[in-house]
Length: 120
Image 1 (spheres, rainbow, N blue to C red):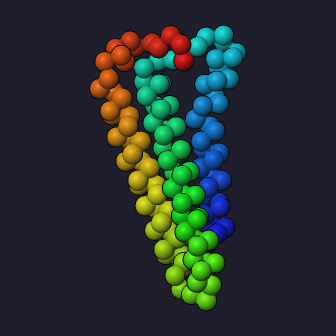
Image 2 (tube, helix red, strand yellow; image 1 turned 135 degrees about the vertical axis):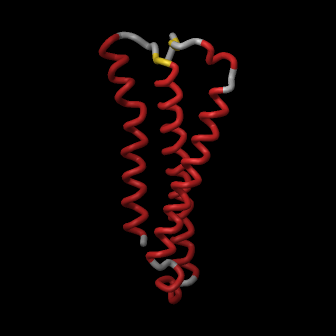
């Protein structure tokens, strides 16, 4: 189970860095710090998604280590592959819903009236 969780965590970390680095490289190359409204909301959605997923996966990994240390003889029964898959799936669902909620709440803010944000 730990390798399954570590592989998911490494995938999330790669995706997490991929949300901001491409736009940063474009900004450095073009010397422009502007971003479109849709680009800002999209980048914010994915940033929150992968940050929240990173936190939840680390929490699941902590629970896995807790079971391995405190209940070593029951570890394979408690942390079976089905439960690990379910915990990762719940982490994904909670992250998607949280980031969607945060992005939709940001859309309602009045200072997002500009279609091109000048200082990104």
